[in-house]
Length: 96
Image (cartoon, rainbow, N blue to C red; front, top):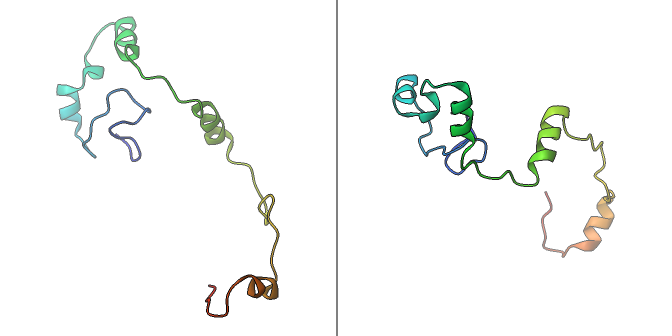
């Protein structure tokens, strides 16, 4: 089990809640590690697999290619001068 994968995660089927495990425990209790013919192993693993949410396709692409570089300015944003900021806030506001 790796960080960010845990109970309820769609990254795997029937992940449970422990944050760590041992190879011995998994060999003994994990049904995916039972020695069986490959076609049976795939059928067992894929049965009752939850549907992937719609964003998974985009997430895979971003993970593979990296996110778009936005640059120094965020889209639709503009820099404010100190004077413009001051004019938008009250006298007793502290801006960090």
